[in-house]
Amino acid sequence: MPTLIRPEGPEPEDFRFSRRALATGALGGLAFAGYAPAALARQAAPVTTPDDGLTIEQTTCPAPDGFDLPIYVARPAGDGPWPVVIVASEIFGVHEYIRDVCRRLARAGYAAIAPAFFVRVEDPAPLADMARVQQIVAAAGYEQVMGDISASLDWVSQQLWANADKVGITGFCWGGKVVWQACARFAVLDAGVAWYGRLAPAPTATPEQVAGGQPWPVDVAADLKAPVMGLYGEADRGIPLPSVEAMRAALQRAGQTDSGIHVYPEAPHGFHADYRDSYRPADAADGWAKLLAFFEPRLKN
Image 1 (cartoon, rainbow, N blue to C red):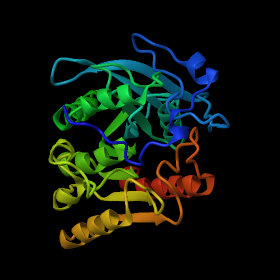
Image 2: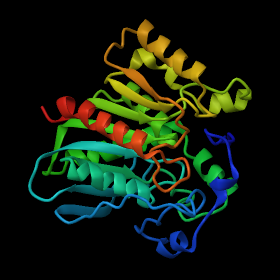
Image 3: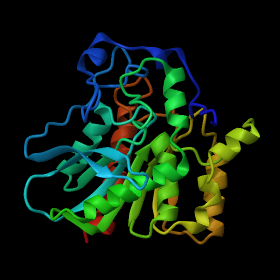
Image 4: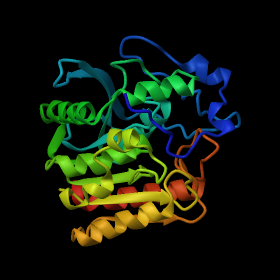
């Protein structure tokens, strides 16, 4: 099993947790946990999006390996059909931050679907032990994750409220890398927004780590079937600017003129994660505005 290295590198604040996070967690069945205690800052005041006027569903869909894949769904109330956005989580899975992102998308007129990629092994969301979280995430290989996305796409295509001809994907950290991979694999996707997902192996990566992370976005730039916008931070320790420039060069060589990367000056990894110390409100708001502007013409027209 490949060892997962946290993209931004561990820091003491990564291991802070609060009683509030643990108290809001729920285990078992289809219940998703509260804010991930492994990264919740003590002073955090996360954005909370109400669900009034929305339809919220926690259900499962059949994955290719026979697993009943839990999914969280948030969409506008009514018949639709609504354009669809798949939401690929961070390493903490479908915790409250990811669910809130889904509700934000629903309020913007999308049906948002968040698959629980990691729960075949264990739900990482309620765990404070980062080593165990890393083990769980490392078990979710590329083919399994792509199969789970395929299952989510198949499920949503059967829903009368969904416009399965207009589908995007967004993801954060681990899920940001998944966005690039999925847009290189699935022709049904119309657009992707990748938030600080790894683009290439670190210079110090072992051969096992390089192999375990394949396919790397920098290697599949020519295979993109939909435009992708990357949102990255200049001060991201795990995704240095040379890897961003390598990805930009790969996109240019491939003629992927509709794809590109925006880098926020001085922003750290996780600048959109409003429950963490890394949160940068201005950059998060600007990135969200860019996401909506990127999706609007591609998913709503």
